[in-house]
Image 1 (cartoon, rainbow over the protein chains, first blue to last red):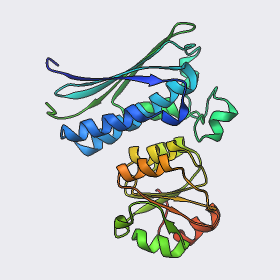
Image 2: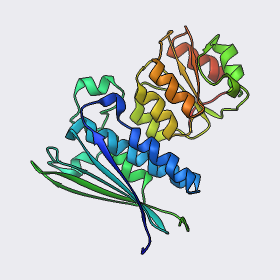
Image 3: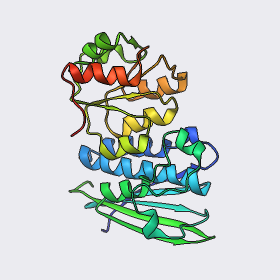
Length: 144
Length: 114
């Protein structure tokens, strides 16, 4: 994993309507690089769910997308409240989202499970009161 | 099923990308919960929803969906329509309810996500 191309985005935590802009841009960038369409789909869905989570729960954060020759890595970092019980948060249907967020079509407790489902690996580091960093990888063939 | 057939069955108004009416869709999803759409839908699908916010269009973009139908005459904002145009997504609006719309498409051969 010597060569890499990095895209960096600030995710605005104040505006739910703009959430997902970074994921849409990543999808365009990966398409321009000629990445396989199924890989693009998996990367963009996982990142989109993560981006929404950062806006809903953590007041925004940063997203790094690193394109390696054999995989695409997404690193989502926030300084929100942290996740108290990661195993519980990984269960489908478990959510701490507000009714307002549910009325907007999210907060059903599918975000983290979806992110795991669409990626080849996912690592969550979280400290209550400090923040959360999620690193996901999707394997691919000879991008760069 | 062609998107043009969906337009006829639902008596829908086309709001964006009319040039895409000849595209085919192979499955459909009637849902107001975008997380479920992200979990289960395959591509080349049509999304029918009563939810109106930009995340509906972004969800469709992520899933490579080709058509979004807003039910009960819900009116998407210009921002949403611009997002859809940018990704070539056909957006339509119908007076029919979500239940009726899904029933019409299903009974005419467009089944759901397996």
